[in-house]
Image (cartoon, rainbow, N blue to C red; front, side, top):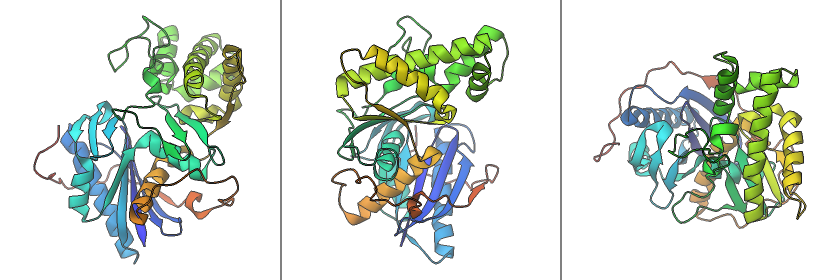
Length: 346
């Protein structure tokens, strides 16, 4: 028995076939868009999901369920994406469409909360009853994990840390606000702010980090501002939620101690009234969302909700679920148009 897993990003769609014992049998990565508009993204998701099902069937391991996770504001109860700006989706019932298209039960969730679930069971959140998973990449969000479950909130919008105002009156954010954390500390913001200071286009956040480490003044200034803003956001998070641990993931986490070291120092300085929680790097990297989607699919089949985090050491080192499978990238492969069920996409 296998399940298929899909992690839908604004730029990239990740997929996996996962066996019953947790072994990742196959991974795939594609460009999310095969054309313009929301319908084109839906077509891509449906088509690539069908590709994964066919891969599993050809291998003699037909899937029994699918899991899909997406960014934005989601209604997990109805399987609907209320709003995902990077996908041009609004009120898209993707779970129902996938279930009809594949003829399989489909589990649905938020990408960051699914990543938090994976880190709770398999990664840096193991053994912690209360932690916050914060991936810092193109955007910034958080999964608030309590006893192995992610807090969703009244509107399914819990954890939108990137839209916490940390610099009132600052740069305009895609959400419509000003001075959001994402406008200072996300990878995109770091690149934009560096270009604004230097006039040099096309320098990504990773390169800004390298230039900062080498002592280039403009890069040091931009990197320091990002760390300080992130520390402000995490200070509010810790003050309100009192987590035992903060797990930092996303592309910016590749900076390692150049990010975690000064961030821990800045956070501790702001939390003068209490001890700061442990600040650790995520362990699952870009696989977290896809592994979380697989876990949701397996939970759906088992008809149960996890009762708590996996105890420290209960998933052995080298566990098959976190073993990297051979990965194929096929961003240029064309997808036949798939018409969603009646209702269309926004």
